[in-house]
Amino acid sequence: MHFTAQGDMGVGSGAKKVLDVVAGLKPQLNLALGDFTYKAGIEKQFCDMVTGKLGTEFPYQLVTGNHESDGHEGDIQNVVRCLPNKLPGMQGEYGTQWYADVPEKDPVVRFVMVSPGIDFRDGPLDYSRDSERWRWTTDALDGAKSQGIPWTVVGMHVPCFSVGRYDCQAGEEFTNMLIEKKVDLVLSGHDHVYQRTHQLGPGSNCPGLKAAAFSNGCLTDSDSSMVQGAGTVFATIGVGGVGLYDVNSKDVEAGYFATWSGRNRNPSLGTLDVAATTGDLTARFVPAEGYSLTDSFRIQRK
Image (cartoon, rainbow, N blue to C red):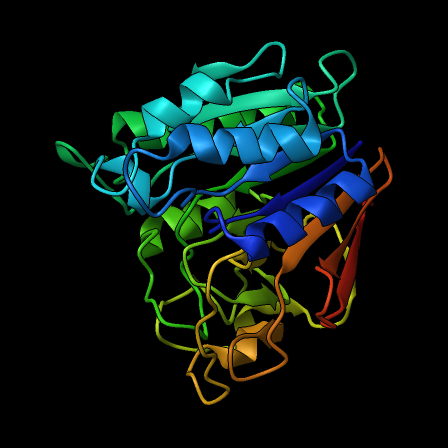
């Protein structure tokens, strides 16, 4: 199967350029990783922009960002109404916390979309250890393994590791759980940069990853060709259309990253383009018109 993913779109010319890229790639679905309008009351304008580029039946699959989660700069429920779920068999609360297997018959990927670390009208959702939402997430991941689904991909708006502007809003404990569950790929937005880690995982020299720190023992594979089960790859694609942030090559977490791009280093809008078969998962960054960033990696099943 074939999908694209990016976050932090807006309704300007940058977002339209990125949607043109997605349309040209012809994926089976797109994961929209939050922060859609950046302004209340223009949700339909955003939806019309998307459907105008991709069609009304295309699965443009949503998870909320912080700009629309609490209703102040858009409302996730308004976006959900005009860009509803298009994946059969979806389980959960679409737009906030859901999973789906694709294809529905003989699935290749289970997508698990969650919302830790951002505020809703009643405050942040509880993704702490053994909370209801923690258990929902672990059950979704364990279910994929027990059903023999080849790949698990988690999407959420906020990252943990970053050389951009933000710290670990997703939560260190929740992030380590994803690694312990051997999630293959974790996708996020929020930081308006592109950044992709090496494969990260626990080991004798890495009992768990710490935010705002670096341990060489947590790098399980540091080239672009990896083996499933050795660790997790984290990619932030907050370059879906809005203004970019700077990246910091001296950030303490920089050793975890294979590549990064921001306003001060090869600035690029674009999308992650991912193809998955029963044997491997390959991904590449595809820049929008006028940009030049490239990145690619591959994970093979044992």
